[in-house]
Image (cartoon, rainbow, N blue to C red):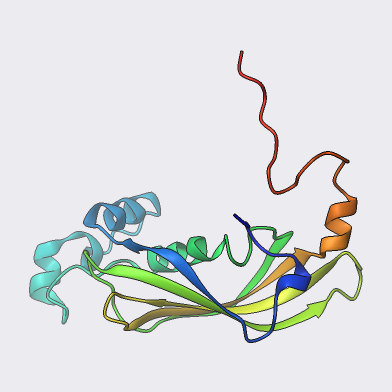
Length: 171
């Protein structure tokens, strides 16, 4: 199974559908909120969400959905990345609730060779997240620096498969 892509393997306009999806649980949402110290009652307090919000239930914290989609895209987009250069834009388009399942897809928007280092290029992508009903919940654009295949192969010692690193022998 391929993990990430080299610069030459990206085509402008290509769409990568990330699989599998992830059903968001209350535990996922609360743990992320607690780990990141976001204690807003809309995410943590069911009674508050029921009585004081337009949604009448807890809303999953948006940065969890962004993080989930970013992670989903790694095997298809940034698994070989030298660096994640920038998140150009991030929009939360619709709320996500406990029990929703999130699916993602990424479109390649642009690619350009590095002007200073011939062994790499920069790829611009847009990732969109949808719930189980096909409603877009999140969209973001980012730029990723990835190696070129010929240079990556030359940097690996003979007999080593960069796709399958070796593991130490068990004792």
